[in-house]
Length: 274
Image 1 (cartoon, helix red, strand yellow):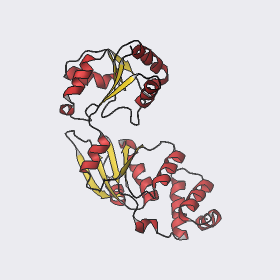
Image 2: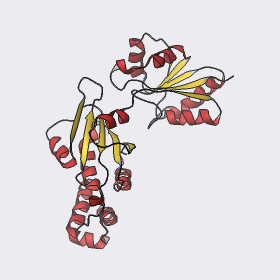
Image 3: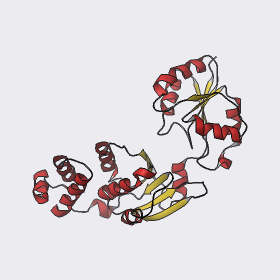
Image 4: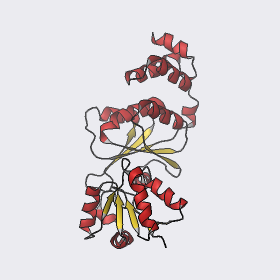
């Protein structure tokens, strides 16, 4: 009889947020798959749990997953955790769960805190309907395509972002979303927890002098009917293309992107730029 894969949520900052059940499961399984063994060891030591750890992250997943599946098929039980929050969301554990489901290996959730739901609860922006967009790509083309694809969504948008990319992300959002309200949630459940409700333009101005620190959840207001009906001028279209060029995009690609966003012809935008 095969074992079971437990998907275990861990605290996103405050160790007191772990559940009794999560502690019990982590104590009972045969081994634990973890994104970063150094982070998980601290958690396990705090609760006096001694279990073998298997490093399982985006660079090792393909090589390690077959070994994990074999051990589960042989009857061992395994818990998969991430550095913080629920694993298997924007996380390589997702593939491990899929493989277990394909092979009829039992998978059981042990729910815990999630940064996106925590941010939605305290952000001060209506979030009865929201989509979780995860991290934006570091590749500019994919990044811009992602923002463009959700620019007209009317529900709230939730993103994760690292401190070193925060400023450029806010600038890109202003470019594609316009000057919407945003709640910038930092270090949730930790000592320096902070929720700043502002606008994209004001946030950009704030971080011109303030240094981003900690992990961020960005809760962005959805597109309003007023925004959706906005008609761009040719000058605004050229300004959009100009900012894309400043961010490293080729002029022809920038004009094409601005044309798709504003409805003007690519050549007209090019001429306005020149």
